[in-house]
Length: 207
Image: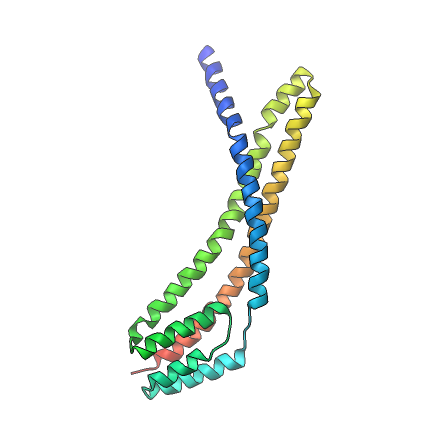
């Protein structure tokens, strides 16, 4: 019985010791989520997609590549003004055309796909981990709160319940921000990847 009591005491002490790290991580998660909101607004303001321009340049590139006029095709790619990732891919692809390293274009597109996935990782992690931290911050103070209730210490009960509610709200807020930004950015990047695939198709009608 004494062993069980000591084991439970160790478990309680270990869980209670995790409260401050959890609170610090939650504050950090909220800070990161606010920064991500600002970054998202900035990215949204800079997004620009012109379908007609993209189609025209794609046709011009295809035509010049079929003629083996790689420098001319590269010049058309350098004129492209689209969303940041698509424009960046077009410029990198133009460099490969000028160097006549066409075999690496597919590899380049895969690199951009990895880059887009990496951009989504931060918000995905935030949307998953923040609610978990919020749940931990809710459950850990319940032990002292119940002890305060049993002892008739209303102040201890109230303080621990305040911590529990606050950590729940912070965790849910950061999780919601991460989830919403992930959904919207995923749609953006799928569209960007579709535009990049269109450019790759224009470059593959070669030889």
